[in-house]
Length: 264
Image (cartoon, rainbow, N blue to C red):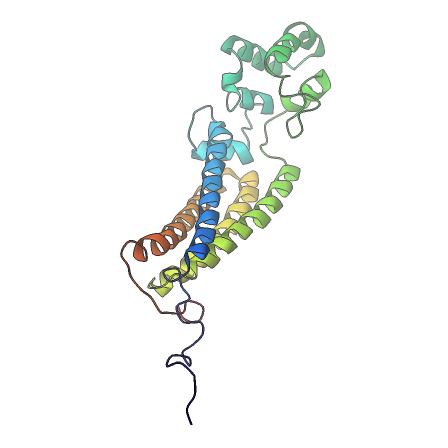
């Protein structure tokens, strides 16, 4: 009996499901997402350099920056730490030193009214006001006085808020980056499995290290190592995915009939 079934009709219907063999529209979809997320990742790193990276008053992320951000500098006040750190460039040295000396002298209200309030109004209140949103309000003595106490780093309330935002947000990013990377072929299984699962482990280590550093500065090294691990995992998956989509296929004209959904 003759049939009209073409010769290869019984081949597996999902043959060739991989980054090299995807259609151009799928590659553009994946590449658009990967590129946008990469730009966002770089912006996040830049933001870290200008916030945590300035905690010790010097540009660049260091061990001391992490300690000051989470554990604090117990030898000074929160306000003094900011004036010598991330806010150092926002006021002349003479004005910064006057505020620091006022804090060390007990932060008395009478001296605030005469000497400190004019400085705050000139250099701080344009950002630190009642309408500033996430920034503290320095427009009144009572509000400013709260930051003249010993610098104990991030508050537990702030850690709770930032922790759940990072866990939910970053895990979603790595889920989609890992999903795209999982369509790669020819990658050593051990490397592929590690690249997919390690970002989640590094993320949890990073978050838990914030809390541990809040209790003891010795744990700050784990914050740095976990952050570096996440970055390396992201870079590896990103580069392999883009390379297979746009170099192996279009440039080197390689063909791949493997099904990445069913085999690694």
